[in-house]
Every structure is written in C-alpha cells, then in structure tokens.
Length: 389
Image (cartoon, rainbow, N blue to C red; front, side, top):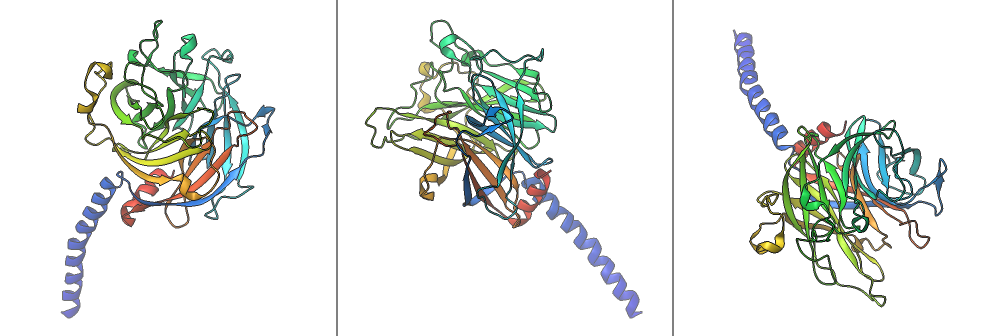
C-alpha cells in the first residue's frame, strides 16, 4: 500500500513539475533572442605582417567581417578599389585568448558580376559583409558620389564570388547631378549585418546624407541613418536616426579629422545591436563600442530630408557606451568591422573587431578579440545554442 502511495505521489510530482519546467524553458527560449550585455573583456590582439600577400593578392583594406559558425571561418571584405574581394580567415580562440599565430588566411574570393566578370577598377568601394546562409554573403559598396557611381547592396556566392541578387536602394540615398541629395563620398554604407533568424538586413550611413545635415566635424556629431531590409521581400522597410557622438580632436596640427559610424552588428531579432564609432583625431584613433536598441525609435523612411523638419522632434535609437577602446591602453588603428565569433569555453560569446590599413605602410591590419558577458545564464545558453550553428 505504501509503495502504491509513493508511486502515486511521484506521478503527481511529475505531472506538476514537468509543465512548470516546460513553461520555464519556453519562456526562457522566447526571451533568449533579447541579449543583455553586462560587460566585455579583452582577450588579446594580432597584427598581420606588413606587405602580407595571399594567393598573389595583398591582404589589406579589411573593412568588414562576418562569422560562419558551421565552417568555423570568417569572411573579411577588402575595400581595394582596384579589385574587390573577400578573404577567408581562421581565427583560433580555443584557448580563450588571441595571440600571434592564431590568425591564418585560408582563402580569397574575387567579386564578380552576374555575367561572371570582374567589376571595372574604381567602380566599387566594398565596406560591409554579412553572412546570409551557408552559401552566400551580402556585401555593401559605398560607390563614388564624385563620379555618380551609386552605392549598392548585393548578394554574392561564397564559392564562386558571382553576383546573385541586388537590393533596391531608396532614392534619398542616391546622388543627383546637382549634389543636393544622397550619400557623401566615402561616408555611405560602411556597415552591414543580418539578424540571427536571417529575416532582416541592416546597413547604415557613416555620416549624414547631404539633405539631412552636415558631416561630422570636431566636437560636432552627424545624423546617420540605419536602413532596415526585409530579406523575405528583398525590399527596404524602415529607417532610424542614429546620431554619432561628438569627438574632440587631439593634437590636430594638420587639420585632418574624420568620424562616423563604421559598422553595426545585430545581436538578436529584437532590434539590439553593437556599433562601432571610429574617429581619426589628428594623431590617433578614437574607437568606441556602443550597445544600441531600436525600441521606441521613430521610423523615418518617409522623411526624405531632415533639413525640412525639426529633427529634434525625432526619437533616435537608444545608445549606451559599452567600451571605450582607448581604455585598453594599446595602440589602436583604423578599426572598422566587427562580428560575433564562436562560443568560448565558459559559455560566453566572443567578439572580433578588425582594422582597415588603407594599404598604407604606416598603418596596420589589427585584429582584436573580446568576451561578451551576458545574462541570465539560462537564457544565454539557450541563445548561444540557437545561434552557434
């Protein structure tokens, strides 16, 4: 009799606890797509050798990077206007750190048009790259406003490098003959990212459109636009206002200053990102990493010119400084690209950032690695399990 009662009690516990556990895991899984970052740790850096060649091409101008978790490699776009291409790199973070010898180029793929021909030299300025699936990547080009070469966002085959599809660019981003609207030269689609569910693609202008405001100046920010595409319809849907942080020049005796939004990275499917704001202050680079949320931001895709309205009434994206890289106390170069890397041994996700050496001897191709700390543990593990394959 006691055994029957014991078995009955166990059965009751199972019937009560299992639904509760299922509900908890389901609730955690639903919320796992929203990542909360609590901190970031530096894991080390690698500087590629100057004058490095791979398969008869110079390794440089590395402006954007994306991670292929299935094949455990990174695809890195070069902005070499004489011949656009992307490299395949292996980056070893298995020991939880990054040091010399941990970064190895293993492939190079030239970018070709739909006919399988190379794009004419000087027609592309490829800056952003994002993995769509195991077979293709999207790549952004800034174009050349001085020659009325328009920016683009195209999909390319990973195996052949051949163009597959082209996303339409809203007219407000395109240059006219009178230089009254559109992107500024070399300040256009610098960044590119795709959400983990592969539904949305985001790009952003590095500085304000001509009709939206001035470019970044010393102690003065600029009004960038984040552009959202629906990859199911292959059409642009929304736009959001992203003001950069004003930067103070440092020892700027040659009056050279450049500042803007150089890349963005989708952390989840809920509109949360990491962004890099990169500035040259006259003597050194200022690099800052931000957490960004689209929640509550106004959709401005129907506003063609911010000059025609009071932009102060527009709710921009929410920003929070995650890391000022100057606090790492290392010599920083022209950091432009970032991507999530593999899951580390402690269950946290890695982050890789990379610099563009502009093919100049005085600059370096620099790769930095970080650990992103997130919470809570259960949600983090579910998220990492979902997005690490």
